[in-house]
Each structure stands twice: as C-alpha cells, then as structure tokens.
Length: 209
Image 1 (spheres, rainbow, N blue to C red):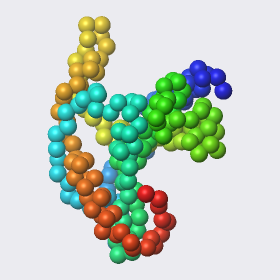
Image 2 (cartoon, rainbow, N blue to C red; image 1 turned 30 degrees about the vertical axis):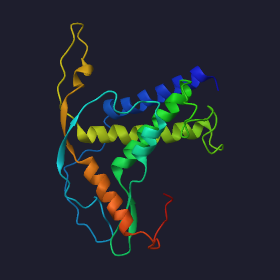
Image 3 (cartoon, one colour; image 1 turned 180 degrees about the horizontal axis):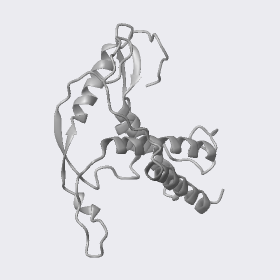
Image 4 (tube, rainbow, N blue to C red; image 1 turned 180 degrees about the vertical axis):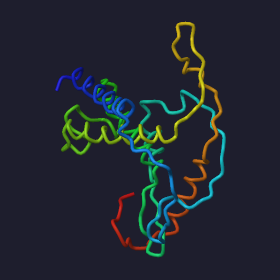
C-alpha cells in the first residue's frame, strides 16, 4: 500500500472515530453507583495511593526513543485474591496503546529508528511478520477508542488562553502543575505484588513477562 495513502487512512480513521464519540453521543452516560465487589472479582488495584504533582514537559517522552517507551509500558500485571487471579492494570494499557499508535505513526511517517525493536517493520507486516495492515488499523481503532473514552471520563477542565489569532495556546500548558495519582507508587505496588507471587503457579490464564 502507498505510504502516503496508508498514512491518510490512519489519520482519517482516527478523526472519524473520535468525531463519532463527540457528535453523536454514542457514549453511554448514567449516574455512577458502586457495585458490591466479590473477593474474586476485583475492579481496582488495592490502594490507597497518594496524590503528587506533575509538571508538564513536552520533551519528557521523545517520540522515537524506543527504549524509553518500552521501559514505560513493561509489566503492568498483578495477582489478587487467594488463588492469585491475574489482572492487567488499566493505566499500563493506556501507555501500551499510546506506544502502539506512536509506533505505527513512525512507520507510516518513514521515521523508524534503526535500532528500534517495536516499530522496526514494514508497512504491511508487524514485528511477528504475520499481521497485515488491516490488523494495524483494527488494533489502533481499539486504542483510539480506549484512550478517547478515558479522556472523556477524566474530562480535564484546565483552561488555556487564546492567541491573538483566536486559536488556543496549548503550548501554555508547558510547565503547568497537575494534581495526579502517584504513578510511581502504583508501579512500586505492582512490582511488589508480582514479586510476592513469584514461583506460584497460575490458576487462570498465564501471561508472558
């Protein structure tokens, strides 16, 4: 497939999916009610976790640094309950999705890093050599949906000023402080949890780490 055509198809699919979310209201809204939780049916990683400040930095995650992104998305699994049921933690899946979209973008833009392991592939195959362009679109579609709906759920109300031409000065966010859940504390708890189950056989679907 032509590189320019595939790139525009990816962009078009992304815009179409996100526009549907906003213009047609296909997101189901209802009043939140807490559901009773069974011992073997966890919904949240047990906390509590502290709040910390994050200063926005536009150079924090370089787009073409594979090692940085690979390190960011590594792990993200815990085992809970008496039987050690395995779960993936949502915020790691967000990072996985962003990294996957980043990877495909670099391929389509012709900016694959020669030492990259995650996106060093052609336009028609993934790293495993078997997945087609259609598989890329299918996975990226899932990721756009997942990330977009999570942003809707968060509904950040931070305000940014307008430029003289009437456009929003998003660069003003650089250096802003955000109130955040302690992601480092969450990572530490995930590592502690996983280490505590080391050597214990899986009782449900095993995962490769």
